Amino acid sequence: MDGEEEGKGMAALLRWAAEMGISDSPTSTSPPRSHSSCLGHSLFVSDFPDAGGRGLSAARDLRKGDLILRVPRAALLTSESVLKDERLASCVRSHPRLSSTQILTVCLLAEVGKGRGSQWYPYLVQLPRSYNTLANFTNFEIQTLQVEDAVWVSERAVHRAKSDWKESISLMQEMDLKPQLLTFRSWLWALSTIFTVHSFFWKISSRTLHIPWDNAGCLCPVGDLFNYAAPDAESSPDASEERYAEQPDCHSQRLTDGGYEEDTTSYCFYARKRYKEEDQVLLSYGTYTNLDLLEHYGFLLGDNPNDKAFIQLGTDICTSSNWPVDSLYIQPNGRPSFALLCALRLCATPVNHRRAVGCQVYAGSLLSVENELLVMKWLAKRCHDILEKLATTAEDDGLLLIVIEKMLYNPSCLKYVDLQCCKEEIKSFLEVHGLGMEGIGVSQLPMKARKSLERWKLAVRWRFGYKKMLISCISYCTNTIERLSSQQYCTKRNNQTGMPG
Image 1 (cartoon, rainbow, N blue to C red):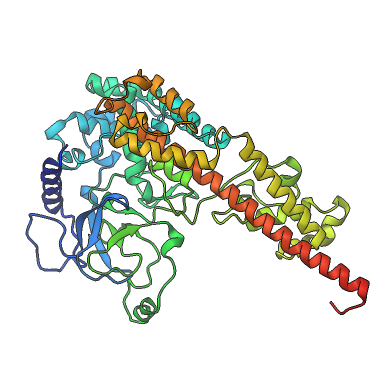
Image 2: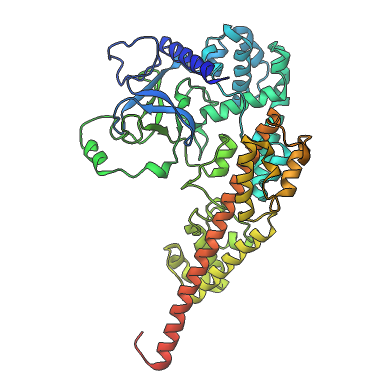
């Protein structure tokens, strides 16, 4: 779809949305706007090439907590709305073991199969044609993640998608879906649409949904145009926000980005912070690591305050404290999480002394210089050993990302760049797609290879970020060791000379 066609499609979507009652007016009593668009009062569609692509901008200055979009229940695409067709509903009732997500996926495919006859046609034709979520990764792309945990998460995503598809084929056949909609490729597209488009309605910690009548959630036209903001990145109120908070505005204290509201039978979205006119308006889908974002949405954040690097820990470390395993990680700045530091401090303490120092450890206190040195030395060595076992270095990955970026726009670049650091991996990519190093001079890569190249780039970006966190951790541990060793030396010397400490 070229730019002109995309623009016409978006205009058609916004006209349809206005007819469906979707509105960005703050109150339902606002003067009626032209039905040419549902936006214009609070929001407008814009493009952000370096910050999420197509998204929504502020059409005016927005206060934190302002109502900025209302989507009526009738406009939401849910299993309930599709299954008003009794024939389809009867088919679904004959398959009680299918999950709510499987049913919503089938319903989405059924609506696609209706073509222009679907109530949501203007919305459906604007959905992405492909996705880069982990379930879409090929074996080559999965293996390029390198880190065992990430590879396992990816393989699990692919396996689950195939399993769900196989369990749902008989239902789709009974519903007389078109043959092209019965394929795994179509299933993967619909499943990815559901996860990437509506999963910001989920509370990621519990997978609980905000909409009360369907565990699978819903697709939300126009509401899914908001791009993502990491929660911690924008959670600090400034002074002006505090002034607004003092005003008796019932929305100024809202802490959520949106939710289904029974009193208006609509899904309502609220500004999560103050925005100036033309700023991009963002939503927080939840607290995600970059691997989570890649699994559910198919993108990464270059600076994600919620990212985490998990490393393999011995059973003795995991069992030395009561901290859950998913709280034991390295932070983006290289520091060990509070729970990991506690667990390591306890593990470095003789077993018969752990109970006595437990309260001190859980208070976050340093037990002793000797204990802290043991912890830092062990952690630095563990990170170093992990990096040594990975197939490429962080420096290699940085250079490979430059090559991949060039390949996306100029495949013949391989003739002119130094491939010593990544030649084998590039060669494997080309072989997977039936291409050779000598035949890469073509002006355009085949579409399948180009899509794979985009996913490969994401995989390399993820492992590059993971390695940088481990490198930062080594640096943090080394600096701490040097500081503590210097203090230890000075203390020992002062004790020997009788000088005060």
